[in-house]
Image 1 (cartoon, rainbow, N blue to C red):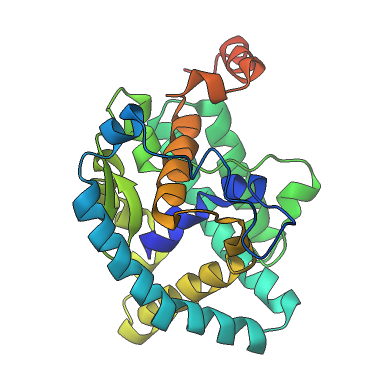
Image 2 (tube, helix red, strand yellow; image 1 turned 90 degrees about the vertical axis):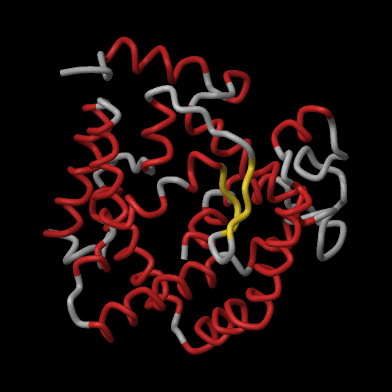
Length: 256
């Protein structure tokens, strides 16, 4: 399931690469550029990673993607959107917990505020009331929490089923399961159904964005994933908007 979560992180990057030239766009973006010394340093295990990537691509081609297409074909758009909102509401709770661990109390207040508002007035997340009152959504996770406290990302790593990752992010897979609702569902069939619906719904949301992947798919997804994560963790100053850090500092977001 984290394979889909990792790909979900690439959504903003994929949308930036979209073109109108053909079904796959022009093979000329920052994400599919030829290997450089920097990219080789980021991906010293490329041989192994490409083998795992090929396995994941096969799984996606014959299992995940057909299931997503069937789900989209049989699910009205309003219901698809509602299911996505329910899962996103649960994600706000995880983000809130991680914001506390990052000592970002302003963000934690927004995350918990969104979760509380959407879980009550929004009927367990069926409606996104929080966004209508301009309560900003922020997504964060345990990997970004480690980055906040100075843990390096380590080499790029592709994991079976889980997909794009790094050593740091991969190390958070097991502990982060305790922040996910399905971990606390005792009934096996219900827990399995919950997990499958979440994964299929997320994969269906990615179908239209696949046209934005250009050039070598492995290189594109690797570069997009690393750039996105570095932007979120603040490890890439050139990708950050200067006023964001200034506002955080002025608001005293690092403490009470």
